[in-house]
Length: 360
Image 1 (cartoon, rainbow, N blue to C red):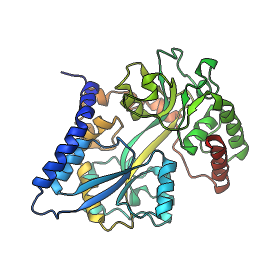
Image 2: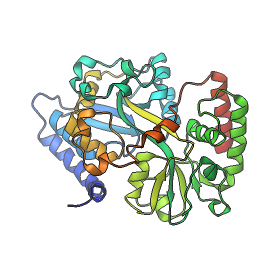
Image 3: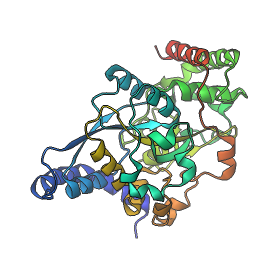
Image 4: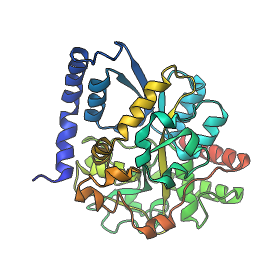
């Protein structure tokens, strides 16, 4: 029997063929109850949904899923700000932003009664952030840490200091994220502060640390997750990374490993949301409910390599997935990590200013 990682590699190789086949199947075998031309526009991360699962939903319902992608949480914020939350039916939103988006009237309250499969979700993730229970459905959770090539950096990264004050051999070999909160948050932790501090002196200190790190940074764009990834080619030796993405790029090079440093990282939760401006809220609810069917949620979780909040799905996943310490970090890793909280406006402004000077 092949290893799940190898099976996923093959699944991704066939994904484009499956998607093409799905177009034909959906067009020729649409259920009689579906209306031709129904479509949902979904704003999300790339590679965040199993194409086979999407094809199955389209075949079963006749509803087409059209994707729009963003490259960072900051990028999604900009997209929705520029459109005033219009033009999309669903969006993946990190828990921190749910309350803010709801205040802007971008999000519709979740029609819980029309999604019976939400009963499978673990309650703590449904209420982990303000406004989450009313406006979001938890999709995946994970950590933020460091993905690196252990053949090139055999000493590894025990602390964030090793990453933000790196050895000379790492000059030009580090990749960051285009995310102000992630970059500043982990820099703050490396200096002994909370990622949620409102101390602007601490933020300025973190800014100086990041400026000193700048010659070591090859890019502030997120690494790709395919065989052309800079981590795979060796152009980058270490990158700030989300846990599941590290496992995804590890498919293409066995020397890539992931670690959450001793100070801990960020513990995040992503949520499905339905946009208030969507005229297809009922179809959006149908899609979210479909994705929370236990068997569907289990398949999708193994494809994406993130921890599912679906209790019933966790009974159906492989042992390799269930026992992977990157997907399911130890309690002490979680205890050291922080969930981002809303900052005072002046602190957020200071963070945005430091980030703008860094990447521009």
